[in-house]
Length: 338
Image (tube, rainbow, N blue to C red; front, side):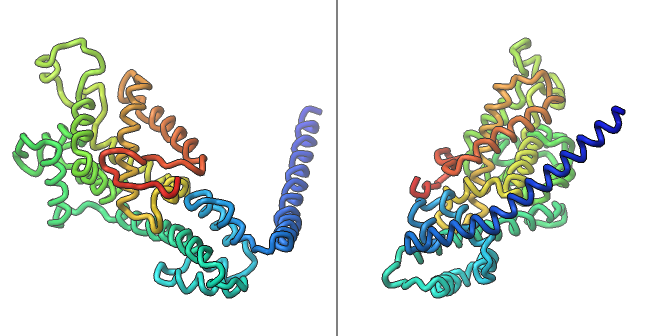
């Protein structure tokens, strides 16, 4: 009897889902298109014109334009999302012609559409560039890779020479073992690029974070006693490993599209790798503050704190006016009409 009731409830739930999906489909395909038709007849402007005129440049406008193009029935409008950046200007001309909009009497529309479309295709290009870096493994036989790693050491430990390439000294800046290349496996060269960018462009903050990460949680022992302890047993966190983890967080925000809100608000046209690296610097600083606020008992709580921090950033990015890092040392960003 109980089994039959559960089965009946499951059947009703399934039917409800099907009915709901049908009405959503009906709304999207029929009612929404009907409303767009009425709006065009009433205002004398197409949807693209209404979006550009009713929303300031930035994420609010670009996200709506992106959605409008993606769900359009017209192949030209759909394909506009994947054009090469060099073809954006011609694509805008084609869209204006398709919509029968005179560029001479509507010059601002072409400028607005071009800026937003450059943001959209630029985001796609950035994802491809970042993915390429992530997939490239660290190669100790590559002089450029080795040079970047040596620069990272010099930036973070300027007064301490590295005795040899394979050394336990790497633990002093937060790597797990005597050869950092093993720690870059998950994020490839992207992790090294981000750590070096942070150390070079926001050196004061990076050095302070490194210093804090090596300190005991509470002042229960004096400095000489603490210095005698093994660095692997620090109650803080491993700076370089956290940097690679935050690189993974920034990467996931990028590929999921969650970072569009931020990048569309800070990059006037095409988002660049530098924009992402500046975002990484911000995330490092914010995670450091968040770690202190959470006051974890030990490093074993890292995954819990990281997940909670990730959820907080995602909530912030749901605000279409959000720009994560408008003001900090490594940033030379100027918000887009915010």
